[in-house]
Image (tube, rainbow, N blue to C red; front, side, top):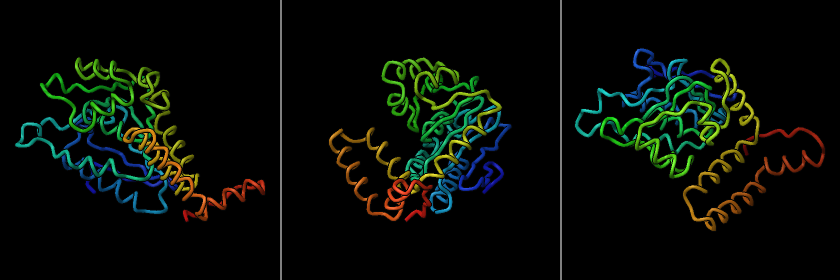
Length: 250
């Protein structure tokens, strides 16, 4: 891992910090690949049960590395498929700018904590382009067609308060509290039964990919499968015995 991405460990939570401050954490191909590799490594580690991604006080990520847009074929967008396949819940902690690819990375997280004065947007239209790493699709799912159309077609930015009010973020706090809030949220998730957490993440994502009936059938199958796990039996027993459950991930 290069200096452009810093990995830390906070108990059962992995923290990834984008660290290209001179470029406002712009997402070069190399950095995007590092993020994907770090996420995959955390996902494969059974002792890591939640992940937080953040930048710094000036920028979560200000977009793609413009210097790479003029290269033949442009940025290597296939790396995003690796980001989207992570099973472990990911919390984004957004301060400053989250624009273009930066907002697409933020929306690839399962939960977002944003600073009140954060600035989020998809300004690709100003370059004669459109979002290429999920922006049109994820904005439409999160905000609805009308607002997604406005933001993508005009390049308008929204602040953290509007992002929260519109349902794009799960929490909006003063900038100095963003990372602590995200880590606390991740720790709360990490304290839950890991098989159930991953299954629940998958089931909620199914709601955006599948017809309702197929999503319901997958949910039912996952529920029944969890009942047969050691953690499922432990959770039911602990409730009956009025004690705190001990999760083993089995």
